[in-house]
Amino acid sequence: MTAEPLPFEGGPRRLPPMPERTPQALRLAIQEHAPHLLPDFEAHWRRDIADAFNVTPVPAFMRLWWTQYAIARDPALEEHLRDLEARAAKSEEPQESARLLAEYSRLRHEAAATEPGQ
Image (tube, rainbow, N blue to C red):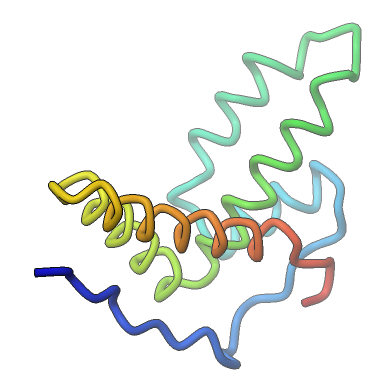
């Protein structure tokens, strides 16, 4: 029997707006609207960016945390993604796992594409 994905209404919800695309603005948004992410954000910053003499890792850092915040600011989306991931891991049907992970990936890509102010 194939499990159906959780229904997910991706329609309009009142979400905090995405900040400007700067590390400082993103950190402040995380602090205010998704404080559970803050310890990992700051640890990652200190480990990979803070003492670096090269700014090369900053774009990758921003892409990762931009996506994480875009998801975390929407508790329904965050829960839906956790559910998709858990169901894919438990599924014994490769096609079902692939379908669930494709939906997971699609939603993460949508979150990553969110622009400042949205």
